[in-house]
Image (spheres, rainbow, N blue to C red):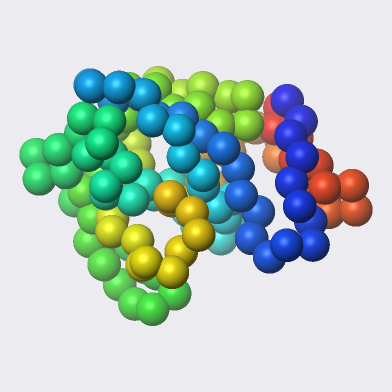
Length: 127
C-alpha cells in the first residue's frame, strides 16, 4: 500500500488504529526508523480498554532525553500503512505534552517488509 505524507513538514505522521477490549481507537503516529519498538501514549491505550498497570512485562528503552521503563502490551489488532498485526506488542508510555502525535511507529512494525520512503514525491510504500 502507498500513502502520501508531507515531505517538507518535519516529522512523518501516519494514521493507525488500535483495537482494544472496549473499542477501536484511531491515532496519529510518528514514523521513526530510529526507534526499535513502537510506542503508544498511555491515555490512548487506556481509552481503548488496556490497563498498563496489569501488564506482565516491563521493558527498558532509551529516549532522546534518557532511559525509561514501560509496560509492553500486546494489542489485539494494530493497523497502519495498509498492514494489520495481531497481538502486536507496543510500549505504553506517557508522551510529553508538546508532541504532536499519539505515539511512534518503530522498526518492529516494518521487520520482514519492504519500506520505501520517497521524499521527492511524498509517498510511503510498505509491501
